[in-house]
Amino acid sequence: MKSPIKKLKLSLYERYILSGLAHGIPVGKLPLILERYDLEAHSLSSVEKSLRNLKKHCGCNTNAQLVYEYREWVLKLDTDQILDS
Image: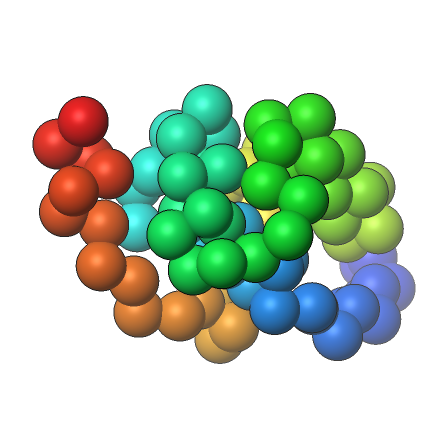
């Protein structure tokens, strides 16, 4: 049996990234979520770096696994305009 990995306390930035994924936003459009909510460092490379670091810490291989691990941290987002663009 695997030993449980201690979960990180997520920053607001990371919470919005995970919330976007949980709401079905593709990784390429996550910077639009961050920009919409006035969060700094909303380039695609910074988003990918954050996701890579979170997955590495949690031992997750996919974004879906990461969202599942942190499902209690997901925020409700207004994604209609972003998904329509």
